Image 1 (cartoon, rainbow, N blue to C red):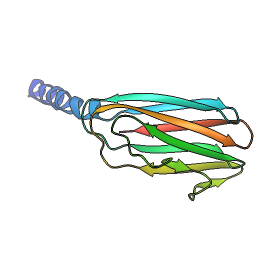
Image 2: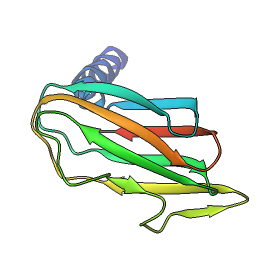
Image 3: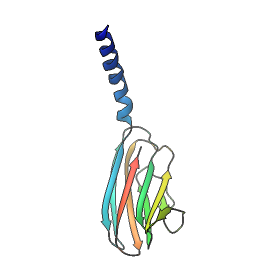
Length: 126
């Protein structure tokens, strides 16, 4: 009886592994100078919906741009000057979720066009 329970647990764990492997996260922490940018690229093998969290300083402007063959066009995905971001004590937390995009390579670029140079954190999940 014990052996069957252990085998059932091992089998259940083996079946759940592919589901856990589908979720992915990239976290970027870096200093960005005024007028500078930092970026991180991801490769997705099947259509993916991205959710992003950007943490930056409240003074100045920070933008998140998505680049890629199938990336949406028309400006930044997140812009601290034009959208409402949550924050206190000098930090903004900007969140966004985006519809599924086809498989391919996507580059998330954080730009700092104005304000002081600052430390930014970007978390991307898909």
